Amino acid sequence: TNSANMFAPRLPSSSSLRGGGVEQVGPEGEGHGLGKMEIFWQCAPCAACIFVTIFASVVVFPFYTFVPSGNAQFSMVLFYTKIFSDTISRPITTKLNCLQSPHLLLVAALLRLGICVPLFFLYISGLIPPNDLGFSMAIAVFSFLSGYLVTSAFQLAPETVPHKYRCVVANMCSVAFQTAFAAALLLALVIRAVLFPDP
Image 1 (cartoon, helix red, strand yellow):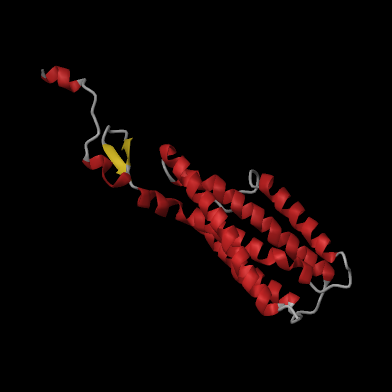
Image 2 (cartoon, rainbow, N blue to C red; image 1 turned 60 degrees about the horizontal axis):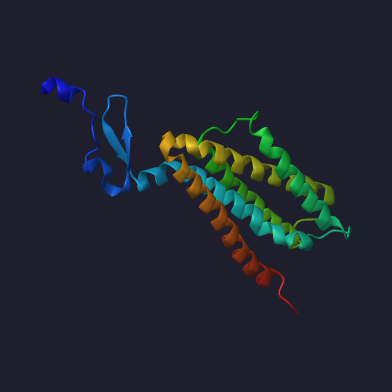
């Protein structure tokens, strides 16, 4: 009987499944449940990076038409500069892997938000002397960082958890992306009413 028990499959105990976790069998055959909160905290830096990066990009985008310039088509120049820079940054993440830590990605996203967004609104408010070329280059760098940080975070987030939880992490990152988009548009409406009220 004892020899038969040695080869019997080990079933997960009720305690290992408690708290919404999923059974994970380690190299020693011991079960270990990873709860939803554990998954959340492990991927939180990447999800936060996505939220902060998208928020910063979307909150300034509606104000391209308010950028002071002698060129009537300057807002279109900024639009295509943004699209081009954002697009080329995504494949570059496969070669330029300078930020391989979730926490470093989050720090970079916070610095981008804290420095670039206030400077953008100072510029369109006329508190910084206008310079079309300089501002276009700034938008190019700002947009390049947007694509780079978001793509890097989406690539790195699944690596923060065991393979079986990667679907959950992908969903969390998608929620962060969509929430940032909605929150930024709401804030942009408020800023629009404050800075550029209708006559």
